[in-house]
Image 1: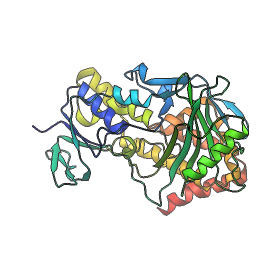
Image 2: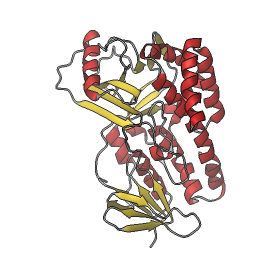
Image 3: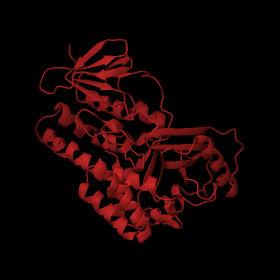
Image 4: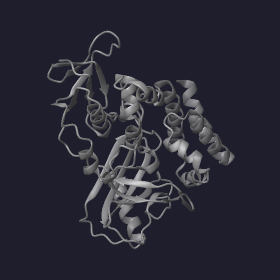
Length: 379
């Protein structure tokens, strides 16, 4: 029997897609090199991004108003939640799917309307389904921008604020070197993650350098650690995703190229993606979900704008980074949300970027204009 859906990859995007497809009675096959591997990164989201079907128990901690620092302090009036990674994975149950441990070498049958689609595995086996979806994320290459981070899980002190990003320079970095910021979020009632992060780099700051910066920053703030605490190392590509009807998650452009966030975008989009791709619903629900689908043409336009934002970040001199984020966090909350979360909000994303550009000094505007417009004209 040919399954309705064959999903390549079992990260958060692929697993969410399989879980929601099974809930709608679809026959699902999933392929991943290590299907039973646990997830190690810490995932977080803005609470207003999450769909209603996400189980409350997957939220390990939340902060009603996290703070951010450029050169000064800002309070973000938007609830921020941190997932229990294990609970999130377990909640996306795929017990009814056929699970194959294997590596997809090629998707050979993306021929809508011409019969089953298919993939070729590393061992030569061909698997077919009515629809094949690539949810394998994006591979790393030396010429692609990356995000890197190094974190320590420490005892949670009630005095410590939840910090979305802190660009202050008390991390011991040498003047003129690429900037990194502190990210500090609760993981539960007794634990807190302190993470030094390179938002975007080509090449990105190494995790060894980020470790040294984190240690220096913690010491400068009197936060105790002894080096035996659990740590977290993060490294992933920010470029390479392409919006399309047969790609989902980071592979399909759901990863924000200028922030690295993708989990909430995929969770909120999965039902409408299934409605459009597989036609799994009927009647009112089908019309509602299909109408809400993140259409590839609109997503491509927003993705292009966000990629321009990534180029701008990469082009900014290190000393100008705090001023850039001062301007961003002084934008009205609706424009901040549009840029951070509006994956198919072309109008909102453009308005946010225009307002941010207008708030910059002329010297920085010239840098941003060269970085964002110049490459687009050459391509």
